Image 1 (tube, rainbow over the protein chains, first blue to last red):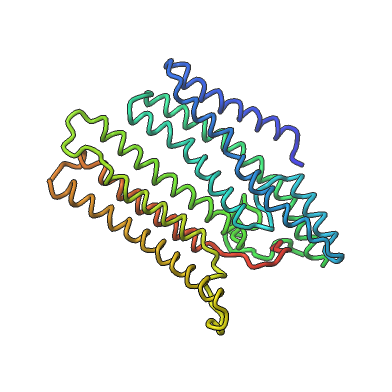
Image 2 (tube, one colour):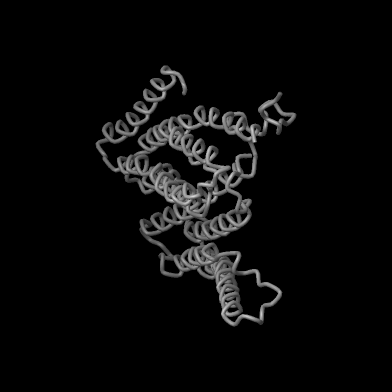
Length: 160
Length: 179
């Protein structure tokens, strides 16, 4: 797994991101930008829900030859919890689509609010920077872990 | 022994340095689906921005009405219809006429595909028609016709998002698919 320092650093950046969003509300005494925090919380959920649904179908195939591969793959899925699953179906696609919707909403909502002059432009800029930090940490949480999965998967493929 | 056999000549190998696996089919599919969702959402948020701006204008020569919403709604419904069809049902076998139930199923799927595609194309045409008849013909300024421009951009982006979802590589029924 990634080092302890990396995880602490990522958690720190995540907290700073949330701090930016909360500051953008508190400094101007206008609490509308807190809606984007709801999208930050909801964004990984469709991936998880729809990814779990498609896994139920995969674990039924207990063929003798493939048993070791299936169990290792399932373990990797649990460890890494990434959406790059091999048994991708329309369900996982729908989950990714909805996650994309929520991510973009997190960036567009402050812009629309600022254009309608409900919040000020500096508040919009702070909330968008906070969003970039939060999504950056969520994205970079996944990629270093997936390197291990890729190498392990490659070794399994070579063994076959 | 090299672990990664898709080494390209660029510095960030296999296409993207932070993306193990690079531009493999699985990754292209994932990026395509995400990008399609991004475009779809951008389309609707641009439209919402246009509606809000248009509704907040003090003296609006072309106030927002249902005709501005119609093309976006028609396009979204067309997108849902087109992507809910099982593509296997569209391809008919050679003995199409031997089973009545199979034939009617294939026919129904093709009808739905036609309906969905018509809605997609018609929605885009409709949005351009609304722009021309409601905004351009009355020679409104660019600021007054902000909603008209926004809904044309919205319809184009929804159409591009639908086409992108069509174009992503489809995976066949192999369970292993590690590459």
